[in-house]
Amino acid sequence: MAYSDSDDRVGAHATHSTAAQAPAAVKILIAGGFGVGKTTMVGAVSEVVPLNTEEHLTVAGVGVDDIDGVDQKATTTVALDFGRITVSPQLVLYLFGTPGQERFWFMWNDLVHGALGAVVLVDTRRLESSFASVDFFESRGVPFVVGVNCFDGRQDRTESEVREALDLDPHTPVVMGDLRQRRASRDLLLALIELLMSGPAQLPGHPVAAQPGTIRTM
Amino acid sequence: MSHWADAAPDDEYAEQSFVRPYTITQGRTTSARDDLTLITVLTTVDAPGEEPPARGLQPEHRLILQQCRTPVALAEVAAGLNLPVAVTKILVSDLITLGRVTARAPLAVAAGQGLDMTLLQAVKDGLLRL
Image 1 (cartoon, rainbow over the protein chains, first blue to last red):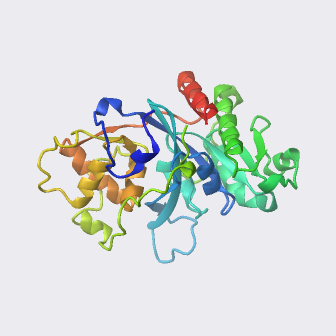
Image 2 (tube, each protein chain N blue to C red):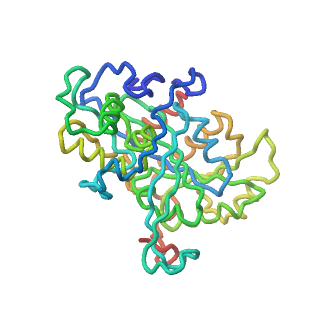
Image 3 (tube, rainbow over the protein chains, first blue to last red):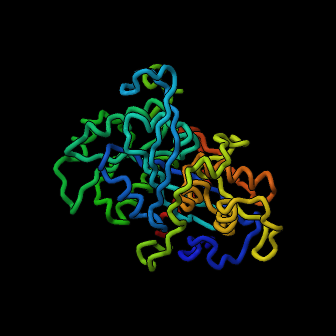
């Protein structure tokens, strides 16, 4: 195993250093409305305390309010929570919780580019807060699974109700679970991997290409 | 597979800094390299005790060298330094130019395209071990 807990400290007794040992990294995005449990899920499966960093985001000014007087571009800062799962000595999986500033995160191409896929978390009391994420991934052809966060097993909507409300493709998996539980969050990630392994024909967005004009890309 | 919640609390990575981020980069706001991503894995080249003199390096450069003795992603380095990703990229880029750090680009993954089954199986196996 390339990592142990103590390695997370800066320079703590590091014993090896050659570049040949560097693992490759892949990432999965955890999306959904504000307060839906993204950081909770990252924390449930991550082998490190969820980390936080910030990135400057350049937003095209088109259709974005509150940036009066700024003609073409504006910069905002988004916070990002992420965690890590060491899959093997050669491979590390990073999970990125998308920023809470819901209007902006999807324009952050660096975040979406190169992701294996995404998890969209929904809160059944506020389904509409996850619409933007579903729309975005569908239009971009990014494979995703939907996770319904059921704290303490409370479940006030059935899977088919969620599916209908979000107008999901029949192939898009919906997983219900208490995402504070490691097992539930893991199963959600497994559902995504199995979707990816099922082949391109099963993925939403295929064979229909991204619909131009639905989402403004930069 | 270890989990962070099982471990003893760690020290904080870095002290809270009162220095403005772009002072650390000597006013530079863009990186010389545009190929660094959040999950580019960075590794310090020189083993501890074998480093060339650190002349000309900022304290933050040295912290990066320490942190990357075990390969870590750029996003983790930024979190550890408590600096924005953009600033971290500039500092990391300096170290790559100096030959002090190597960078491994993320695996090429195009969302929705046919993915490497070996890769997916490895991720699946890793998750099942959690």
